[in-house]
Length: 164
Image (cartoon, rainbow, N blue to C red; front, side):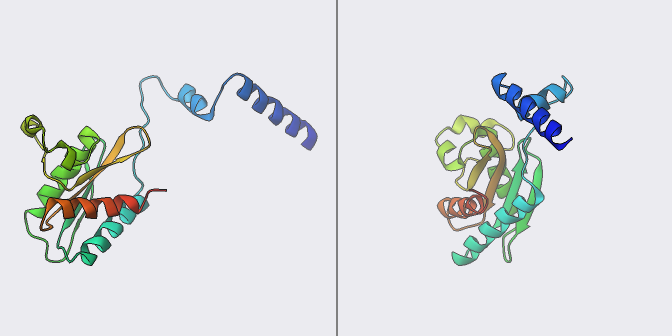
């Protein structure tokens, strides 16, 4: 019985390889035609990002708020550091939204002021996208440091906490 099962499994695996059939194709075939699957950061990953960013903020003696949004721009996590000003939450959310919307760091978008007309965007350094290798799946925004470059370094520290 074990031999038959192993032989059948090997035969199916062989057919799958020969036919170019993958696990992703099997999932896509099984999914209803009117649905789309999307990658999102897990709760554990959100916490790792926030922890990595907050540690960098403390190291740089900055009082910031860290915001993480998903691909649709919905807020997934806000961490307001000790002493962060009241304006930092909104700026962090808008930087995260801008980074995920355009798939680029907000510092790279700052030159394109036409984008400022889009509601919810903020073209100041401090937002970085999180990608799944091909497209943005989340945005990390930091607000409150003494300069946008520092905000962005803190956001990148959060991103680094989940890379690799």
